[in-house]
Amino acid sequence: MTAPADWIGFAEMIGGASGALTGLLFVSVSLNASRIAGHQGLRASAGQTLVLFLTPLFGAAALLAPGQSDPVVGGELIAIGVIASWTLLANGRRKRWRADDDALVIAIFNHRFPNVLVMLLFVASGIALACGANGGLYLLLPASLVAFASGVLNAWYFLLPPLSTQRKIREQVEARDRSSE
Image (cartoon, rainbow, N blue to C red; front, top):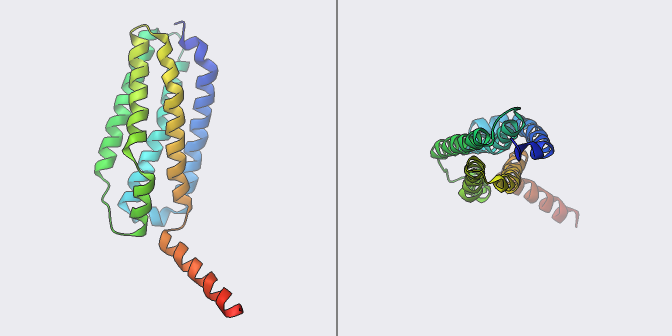
């Protein structure tokens, strides 16, 4: 194994970031557990975010496993991308959009393009490595960055109050401001 050995530092960094972000996702979901538990779309978004954070972790683990040949690591990256894609597709079918404020924000943060892009890049990286093109590993960088960015946006939403609550707070502040004038 020649090329993946050069990627040890990258894999350690991506694995560490992925683990930290996964932990933060659990914190953000725990802080709003009752709201998320009562909304199928939010539960599906939490699952999607978990897959986006764990996929780079599994890719990093494949790169760090000692003594594997390039085609084996390539096959593992392909498998990771395909399994994560299947999981995201199955998770996407569970989403039932309701006409509420949470559904509106889910629609804003939840796009298929980043999910598809991440998984295609993982699969393409694995195919390239399995075919002897070690440069395919460079596809793991944008795949990981897009996964992290998309997942962080989803996790950030879990920390925000629903839009209806935000409107109520804004109305109370405006009413207080009018009464003090």
